[in-house]
Image (tube, rainbow, N blue to C red; front, side, top):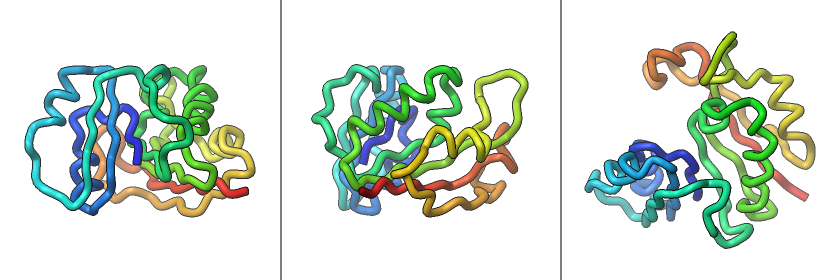
Length: 157
């Protein structure tokens, strides 16, 4: 699993404890340093990297899953196609995109909301939208309450 924009690594811990091998990257080296602090054990392994998601030398098509929590929505809208392209380079052929996406309406950003229509245009076939659930308010940050969705997209052939 790859987690771009991992920040302080809250989700990294959960995925590692669930037994996943997690590779996490963030351009903020202080955030990565905080994420590396001991935070529980798990059955999986974690590799934290300080660096640029777009240029870091990951092996091509290395990941079964790419997870994000508003990584796409925190970047300028003009970067969205580039993010999806990079995800495609790093994800295995039948890999999945998993994550929490901000779907709210904003006049300024970030965050920049991802509407259903924008998501459909950004992730055309062969992506299959397999799950779309509202995130409970108690699991959202205050700024995102009522506007976050857990979404899964599978890319088959």
